[in-house]
Length: 632
Image (cartoon, rainbow, N blue to C red; front, side, top):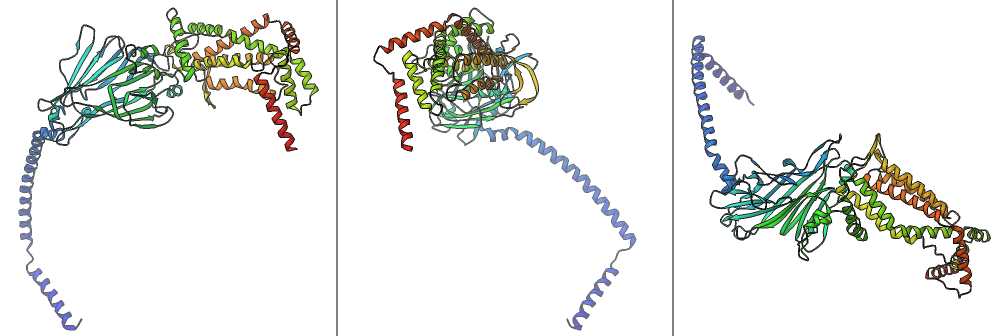
């Protein structure tokens, strides 16, 4: 930069500073200007306050004026139902109390009047299957202008209140109105003395609101299942979503983990089930495109699981054909559920009784056709279920007595032959087990004794044993029925609460019936071991140890089970001990030995015959010996 340029910038700066100094106002002029500015500010502030107040009032008036317009934009033809007062209506008979709500036109709560829920102090409270906050039901559909409407957000109005006919059927029709003549009716009908609730959906002129070709609605049903019983772990095991296909059997989601299924086939009914009660949606036609979901709830939440069911149901917008369902809200009681198939045609049975886990195959057959009829027969005359279980056990043990006697006689024969078996073991070295076994089996063959004859009677008793294992946890008749110290035969009987939790499934309490069952099993095992000779046979010591281990395992398994089941096993084992002593008193083992010797003498005069079992055993021994020789 040259000197002339620098001189120019300095000159410009001097001129600007000089001009500012010359034009600077005096102090009087500054004070006058300040007073003027302050007055202008006050005027503007006053105008602004009036303007804000005016704008605020205008906006409020505008919102109030346009509220209906906004609802119309969101709900269209259903804007008239978008606001309302929530009201409740009750349908009630001898068995259930059902509360319906105007918002959503849905079922808000269900109380089962014949049952109660017990708290930790054993105080009774009404048994509520579900409440408003725990359940929801809604139907979703689309209008001509592509608005998606959900019935759960809209308010229904009763058509004429609750009506009652000559048969005692109570009916309530809740109507979802539109701005025109079209509407949708939800009709609920509760018969007298029944757990089944009729439910129907019928439209009028909805084809003017819905797109052409509409023939279905999307239905969403969700419910949180509350804990109703004493033992959560056991109750959780029997709680699940179960469903029946229209043309197939009953299936279910997992009870022990989160589960979800998408069903492509048509479904007849869906059950939200816990151990003793169910809420069942039954379609008179079918449910389509069904998705079911079960989610586990927290241990201390007071709930077992959350169930969700989403499906598509047939719908006629013209109203010519109604969509009809039935709801079952009630106990998982075999006789009650079976009665709904009384007049059903072949192939159209609901088979709701399959919700009760009576066991598969022959075990379920024993329960359905033997145990349950016997149980119901005694219940006609006796109200104490502890006595009913006692009588049931006595009858079962009496029926099985011939098998018990045969099993004992087989053991007695083996026992009187023990000296001869000991002689064989002394004569043949222990390092020749095959030769020992062959000689022993030859002895059995000569005297006509089969080592399997004692096992077969025991095996024939197994179906009843396992059938009872399924029956007691599923028998709602035992729920909250007390006997002796047990306050609920369907749950564990706790005589002591421990300050800690014992592992391996035992828990933090002690069941007295379980202890008694374990003690009698140990005594019975000792009695049986005394009647047998197994320790001298290969693996006999291990078998003896296992026989004593089983009752101890039962202690851990049954401590959380229904006390009625432990009580049954205790009585059954006690009767078995008594039977053993009675049979032993009447059986003369010297006479049995004489009969076996006579049998041997008789068989020695006849050509030797080998039974199929003996022949197969000898064949296996020969093959084993050949294999040993080849290795040498």
